[in-house]
Length: 421
Image 1 (cartoon, one colour):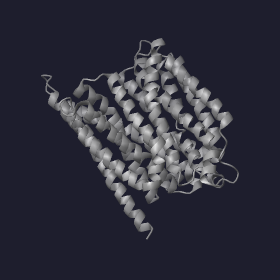
Image 2 (cartoon, one colour):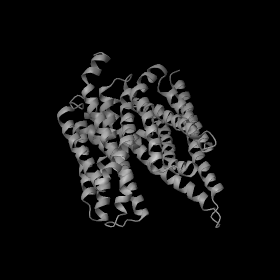
Image 3 (tube, rainbow, N blue to C red):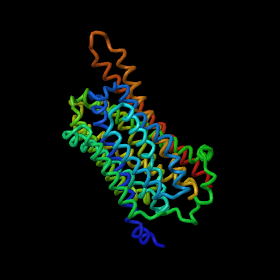
Image 4 (spheres, rainbow, N blue to C red):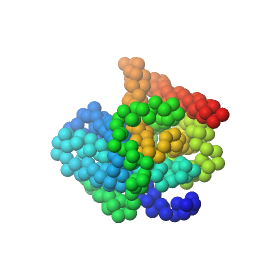
């Protein structure tokens, strides 16, 4: 069957998969601006530490259950796992909306985290229906859904909260249930009786996950992927503090900047990545993306109102968005190509777990770096220099992480060249 025929046949399923991931990220984006105000309200009186634990509980559950969902999708099929996960996410949002106690808030976030790890299953579905040549383009759809979700989610959450702080959660739940109906009627199953996963699914366990990480090439790809997401999480956590301190921006201004970063991600991962991979291959994009990301993270702290202004800030934000958007779908594609079809579900589940761990490590590392610097601020309250110092330290740490990823990608390329000799 030709590539054109394949694309025509599976165009509708790809739209459904894109919608599923997009709604997942819309929900995640809605939570970001609303949950802190919701949890600290008069009903719950949650402390800032408790709010942090609420966010952490989601990431930890994703970390644990992403490979589980991947394994279940290998055994029982992609469609039922995606269907149950999107319904579970909707129920989690309803629990948040109807919550009367702090325990219910944690229950809603934990349930959402458990079932929200369905991105690995979506990736496995895309891998099932695309050729190796079109794999990165298919994975780029997930990146585009991420970008759109982060553009629209926080804006929707802020707008809907005008009618009640709990309203955004009900809206997110309604989106999930509508998506479940679409998925049920429009998404065909790809794990058929002759699919390679059927012969191995019964023997899968977490030991198999560890065994897959013993494969040198796969382990190297996952480490590079981890470093990218840690650096990106540091950037997203520190960027608001940077724009507030250096430019005097408020949350609305910074939100526009994040929308700009997300728009670039959508353009690259949703439209350009497939053609770029065909022309250059995955690994050169990873190397180039790491270098762009590292340079931008190093340079951005120098930007200020008198040092480039908004134009320089837009250039810096555009470059690190471009670097991340080129490399992450290429890395996901490399991970999927490093194993056979029978292992796709579980390996992509591991990939998503690595991402969840990185998203927990990045913000924690940012807090340590900024707090350790601010702790040295004098008692007289003069903190301009030390705050500047903390921003440099934080961004340069992320830049150093990306330089490590850059050199590891070069090393991976050398190993791949040696293997083909």
